[in-house]
Amino acid sequence: MTAEYLLRRPRRLRRSSLLRDLVGETSVEARHLVQPHFVLPSASGREPIASMPGIERLGVDELVKQVGADLELGLRSVLLFGLAAPGEKSPRGEASAHADGAVQRGVAALKREFGGELVVMTDVCLCAYTDHGHCGVLEAGAVLNDESLPLLADMAVSHAAAGADVVAPSDMMDGRVRALRDALDAGGFSDTALMSYSVKYASAYYGPFRDAADSAPGHGDRQSYQMDLRNAREAEREARLDEAEGADVLMVKPALAYLDVIRRVREASDLPLAAYNVSGEFSAVKAAAERGWLDEPRVVRENLLAMRRAGADILITYHGREALQGGWL
Ligand code: PBG
Ligand code: ZN
Image 1 (spheres, rainbow, N blue to C red):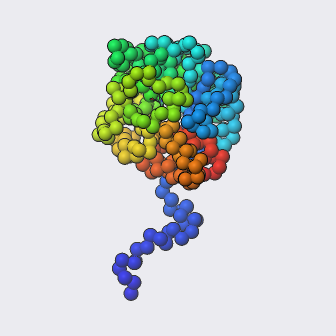
Image 2 (cartoon, rainbow, N blue to C red):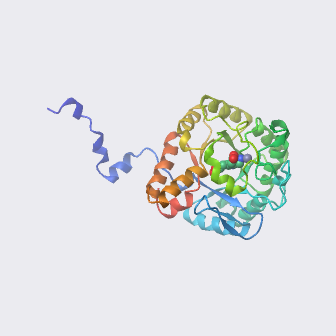
Image 3 (cartoon, rainbow, N blue to C red):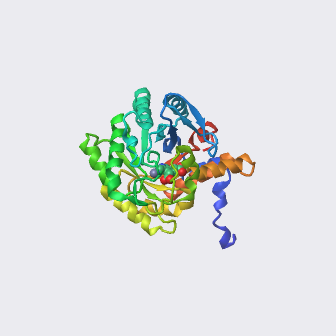
């Protein structure tokens, strides 16, 4: 007689990789991945980013080459961030909506070259274009909400006009999803989708990104608009508001320190959900791997699986290219 407690043996299904594959609950596939890019306001150029090994700022021609190579790997979605041209930053960041800006030119070039083979998403935020580095209009030390909305809407419309498939506001102003949706529809872009950075925390994990995009605030921090790290209930509220305002896709950012939040938002809304595996999460893995302290391929797979297991559909990650190249998934 088998002892009662040994009748159930979960190890039976772990005996071989075939059995494990048969019952594996979650997977990360190329189709889930979005590769972010930093676009220079020039045709050529490739600039390494010291704090993000393997990631470079790319001129528009270089961007097209890189995305072409990535498409061969099966990486078919990109998220573009723009850099301002020298002398172009201003108090209100109007250059963010210029038709000849880095992102606008990058989107047009990618769509010309790859058309329907590629999903082009763009980040919508003023911080790389304001001279103070805040994500909205700054007045007497305060970031003004409603005054920032028309600027963000202009930026989103300029991306849509260039051919973006998805615009993604990351500024965290209240009501911006509705403001962007209205402006897009009024501009004849009712088919352009909107992925909202709905649940974006005032995280220290954005450090390397701010070097990459030259978008760090000159004074102060972003705690008056990005979410308080202590809050999870509030995440559901932000998600519900964005859904009501017309978002097509929701996002939680960062990802790894917020897996509980991904799960909560997953359960609070049935919209597709993205997780943003941010720059600091990427760089921490890179730094440890460079020292030989972590096995990078296995850690990256583990991290990406964690985001999927928590409930994310879409994974925005700087690891995308190398993960597919190396067969890490
Ligand atoms: C711009 C923006 C940031 C990130 C995405 N969009 C920086 C910030 O809010 O300070 C962070 C992405 C990353 O760290 O990889 N608002
Ligand atoms: Zn910003």
